[in-house]
Length: 113
Length: 114
Image (cartoon, rainbow over all chains, first blue to last red; front, top):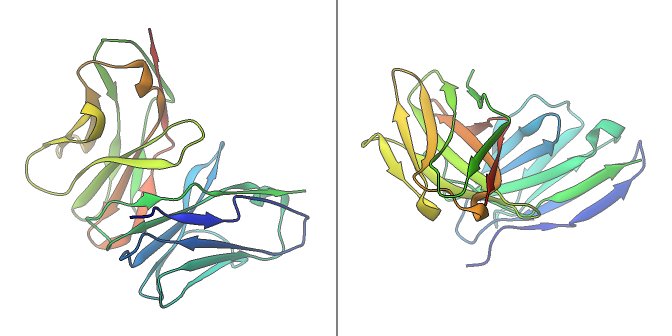
């Protein structure tokens, strides 16, 4: 099976702009989670989608949003970018939740200038 | 609220020696515990998990972890470290009452020296 793919791999944006990141999960996986990874804050949970429904959300401002499509592909959007949004954004998919392990994509490296 | 603590930012061991990477957790319900590894310039990879049953779980690359309910710990171990084990290790927890949310520790950098 193909792994989790994320596009684009690298992005450079300017403060105030918005960005959309894409994630394609492993075939058959219905749960997609998003994380922000930074050197200072580690891995921070953004949100989790299962069968097109957002079931969990982390402590991030409303500028961060996402959605999941019927084919389980997911997008994450960040509006009004701030310098502090510079990070590696990781997508992870799993067959279900709870007891199932997650499989991570390579991430999208976002740099905000 | 659920939380994970990895008390050591860095663990250094000599090749061939046993290694331990520590993890403690806090959850409301029954814990589901996971270890992941991140090699340089590579994505996070699943190593092993504890869901229920035997407190000693075995995973990939010769790693194992011991679940201790009374100490709320889930330490990662390997009897004989390899230089290639050098990486960033993350412990993660899920709560069976909030199964979709994973909380990760801050990570422990393991360095194995020849």
